[in-house]
Image (cartoon, rainbow, N blue to C red):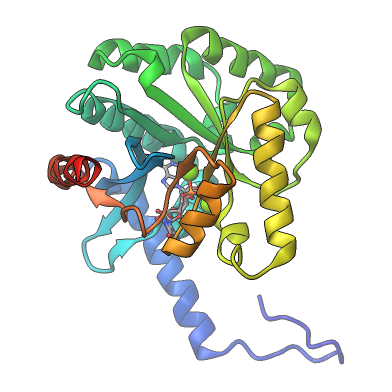
Amino acid sequence: AAKNDGRGRARTFNRSMLVMLEQREMLRRSLRVALQEKQFFIEYQPLVGLSRGIVGFEALLRWHHPYAGVIPPALFIPMAEADGLMGKIGEWVLEQACREATTWPPHLIVAVNLSPVEFLRNGLTDRIAGILDAVGLPADRLELEITESVLLERTTDNLDVLNTLEVLGIRIALDDFGTHYSSLTYLKNFPFDTIKIDKYFIKDIQTNRKCQIIVQFIIELAHGLGMFVTAEGVENAGEASWLERKKCDRLQGYLLGAPMPAEAIRDFLRQSSFVLQA
Ligand code: C2E
Ligand code: MG
Ligand code: MG
Ligand code: MG
């Protein structure tokens, strides 16, 4: 609706706002058939260990819209959640990513993002156990990435789900750490294996003293609690060497490898092992 400009007059609804709304509506409508029309695909971004060994890959969902091209997840996932479609889409991602991971060298993990609606849906642990069983992936090769927003509601239920996942042997990563409602009680109460520091803190890591102090603190906090730390959004060698000096366990970002289609993983791994041997 048109917004009030504060002086009692409604601002006119301009043409570009209309175009934007029409595009959103168009996307929302086509999202309903995207799964059955097989328009989703997954890209995999390498997670790289301290000695530059590949630890695994994070699965990142993309939607290839027939007219609009490839739509980023930040745009369509909120729509899918609002329209009750994210449960089915998330199940597809999990099954697809776990099946893909069975074709990789057996020490590599696959990380899959779970949105709050997926996490809070009943029967999550049974569905995941069923998928692992069906595709034949050992539970300890799956890492689930959740954000702090998941933990805001229904805290005891959440704890039950996380504990069940832990008992199954699945790893849990706390994604985008530091950008939501970071509360240290989460770290006390929930069994995380890994904390992922949001790229927001990484992009200024070489120049901004406050970012340096915050990141160093998160790394020490995580290690003190027996958790691993991943830095997201590592784009240049200066950032990587700063993080390596501070003993950040894993790096992820364009410097180490952009998200790639499943078919590119084999070549990527071959080249990386060559680099390690050199
Ligand atoms: P995320 O889980 O924090 O994923 C990291 C995002 O950072 C990805 O964006 C990735 O492409 C991007 N990225 C990687 N390296 C760099 C870098 O060096 N610099 C910068 N600036 N960005 C980098 P993407 O793929 O657009 O995904 C955005 C978000 O959408 C993800 O953030 C995640 O929260 C969500 N998402 C993606 N796939 C799924 C999925 O299958 N299910 C759910 N529920 N959420 C997903
Ligand atoms: Mg993630
Ligand atoms: Mg993240
Ligand atoms: Mg994010």
